[in-house]
Amino acid sequence: MTEAEAIARCRAGDHQAFAWIVHTYQHLVYTVAMRVLRHREEAEEAAQDAFVKAHRNLGGYAGGAKFSTWLYAIAYHAAISKLRARRTATNDLEVVPEALLADEATAMHDAQDRRQVLELALARLSPEDATVVSLFYLAEQSVEEIVTVTGLSASNVKVKLHRSRKKLFEVLQAHLKEETWTLHEG
Amino acid sequence: MDAPRGMTGPEADAALRDLFRAAGPLPAPKDLEARALGRIAAGAPAPIPAERPLLPRWAWAVGLAFPVAAWLIGTRGSAVPAWMEHWNMPARTGQLFTSPWLLLGVAGGTLLLALHVWLDRRLFTTFR
Image 1 (cartoon, each protein chain N blue to C red):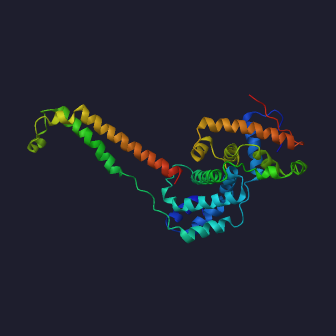
Image 2 (cartoon, each protein chain N blue to C red; image 1 turned 90 degrees about the horizontal axis):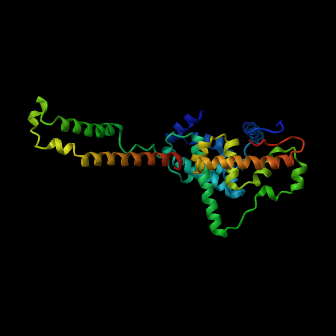
Image 3 (tube, rainbow over the protein chains, first blue to last red; image 1 turned 135 degrees about the vertical axis):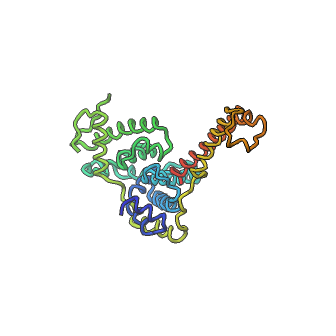
């Protein structure tokens, strides 16, 4: 089944077609929510909310933007809503990124595990920067599409990407000793 | 991940993209799919049918034709075509149709309506 077929069948009331969409996008939607919230249970709830909302409003998807962009925008805003609710409830209590709770020595020892090192590097970024970077490098969204997802300005997205790339390289350079990760400025 | 020393911006982008691709997205909890679909099946009604535009396309065509026709009638003045003579148009109809107030009002209304439709479509595309 293609994405376009799945959308058309969903609009006709085929629940199986929406199951295909959930199955296809669950990991990336969860990743977007996790980058914003940095909390597994909340991210799972936000991802569920995003899929429910997407199903309810599929008729409103005009096709102007890519479906993935539309879905990530819903996921991003669902996660932001959860973040705001958390801040109200906990009076701005900072949630420590789970990746930082891991023993750094262990992380450095297991430097071969790229996912772990990448998570460690992303945890050094602000949630917003980590989201923008993940959308750009992982979800392969363009700057314009990230603008649609996040509501940030294009110049702001570019600045965040540039700054985050530099930070990521610093962490990667420190942890991936056997490989050279240096960024040539200019 | 053979990233050469002293990478430029595009090279750094490519290296990071490779790294992100190799790492992949965070694995969603195993029950996410089932729980999301369960919530949809339990409470969600059938998907809302696609929104129709506020005005159909033919209405825009008619709306555009009206000021053009009004302008043509107004500028022709007394030289009304023979087939229109029996309409017995009131005096100064032409002046009324070419009144800058009327034309500006129609143009302003059309612009506001177009802005409303554009914003509404953008909202549907991004947030709903």
